[in-house]
Length: 248
Length: 322
Ligand SMILES: Nc1ncnc2c1ncn2[C@@H]1O[C@H](COP(=O)(O)OP(=O)(O)OP(=O)(O)O)[C@@H](O)[C@H]1O
Ligand SMILES: [Mg+2]
Image (cartoon, rainbow over all chains, first blue to last red; front, side, top):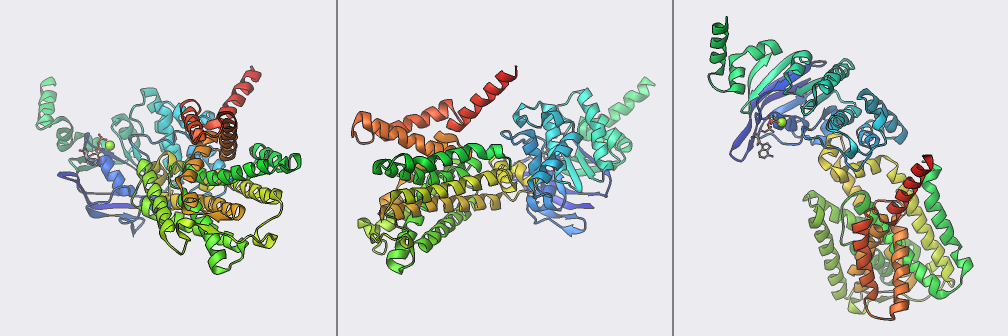
């Protein structure tokens, strides 16, 4: 459904994304992990049309969308959330979500109804009349998700929606993401919270220095020495193995 | 659309409509027609600046285009006054669209956008002041021929009512925009353009639509000016006074509120007349007052008069519930 082929993006002297390829099939939950600064957010921005790639192409449902502006990709069904949440601070929660809902429902009443339904799915129904600026961090993450969901996307790109949440908030939101997928939305998620990656993702890609260094089921990928080294530094995998042997 | 949203603006218009029965004083009607023309210009500014968050400092470009197009079409083209006004409104919209394309394509925002609009208005002022076709510095005088067909009336009250209808129509339009998809998208672009685009909003198209409509509304105020005073020159039509009054009225009355520009125009000019009455004819005393009001609005009532009234009501309601 989503096909990212050999995408690169240079910022001055820095190659933030370096020949990255990945595919996501319909109905999957796929993870994208990697150390800080690996280029994950940049890759999301390229997929959603906010940054043009220096090289490579993005195909969505078989069509090349590499040159299409962000709002047209949203119209085709690619929705994203922002790692740094971007609420419409001066608008109420209802109006925030309604902006998303208006994409498919031009009439006000329809849009409001769909926005309220999306709010209920994210547990925001008691906050509908409050300004978005009143929300807590967890609330803003939920709002970010509700808004994206209100556009009725085919694929949802989630950029660290669990970051900054406490363990109980994380436990609350994991099933919500699963329900969204079961409702027919394909999910590609950037996540540092490994508990969530392990329990949600069917496959993960690991990005380091802009390159995909590993891909597969979460358990295998986490045991991959390349991945361990990407996170913990050169030689770490060997030391851990040695430690395990010594411990046993 | 609920009745509650429409009630305060409807009351305001209703009250204003009664004025000619309460007084037939020419001074009063002159004063009110001026207020309505400024209010209409401010309504245009408010659509782009208040709802869209794009602060223009050059709405004179649109006011002047409406005013000059109306006058020139009649004087040079022999076009009927009513039709000239309609063309004037459209011409204003076109100028708005062109400035929008140039400024928004270049991703100008904030003070850069404000400066560019100011520059356009000034260029138009200087050009019309210099060109013979536009009457140069002497300006343009419309032939006095009092007939309804010529958009000239023996009674000031009739003209006053026509101006009031224009203001009322724009009030209604604003309410409809505020409560529809376009309004939601405009607010989204104002609050956070990136986030809006992620939700499928074509930010450029939304801003262009807003500036075109905004310019057309302010141009309508220019058309009314021409028809009422039957005289204009570059410093009137394209002068910065109208750019400033349009934004002041909107900000003092309540930026981004439906009735704000009308209430702001009434307040500004009402207080302006009062101070002139007290302080005599010291040149610029009303401008000092306007400056003070702007500071007061920004410092103490960011949502202007309408915003403050609304807050009072909320406090009273929640107080009553306790
Ligand atoms: N607009 C930009 N201009 C210049 N450099 C940028 C820009 N955006 C990102 N970068 C750089 O590109 C690299 C990749 O950044 P990116 O935000 O994609 O990483 P990330 O994997 O999302 O990291 P994190 O886990 O911290 O969110 C970083 O070194 C970052 O500083
Ligand atoms: Mg990131």
